[in-house]
Length: 120
Image 1 (cartoon, rainbow, N blue to C red):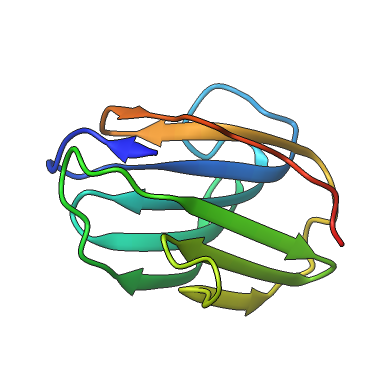
Image 2 (cartoon, rainbow, N blue to C red):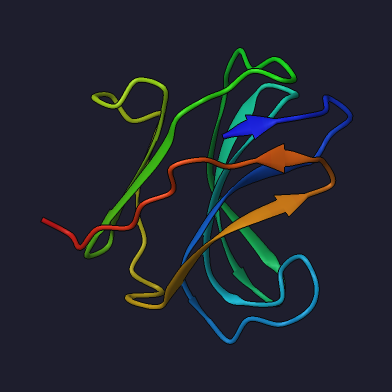
């Protein structure tokens, strides 16, 4: 994925989502994303936002990055570029299933080669 601007905002993946609605946090589920401002984030939404983890990264506008999320049971890991060492690793079993999608908030972004696979 490529985040297009550095003025704030982020883009990434929603997963285990139910009850999607209109508005930035109007769903029940998880979100993992990156911002051109230099951060990877993981959180839980349910009409509001609960941060679960974040980490500073060197992310420049218009640069392409590979984002991977694994969610096996309550164990959630977020990878950016390095697919062997997670940038964020948490345990949260609030949501166990639901839809997967892409999300953009306060920026422009493009996505390519999005794939969803069952847990192994």
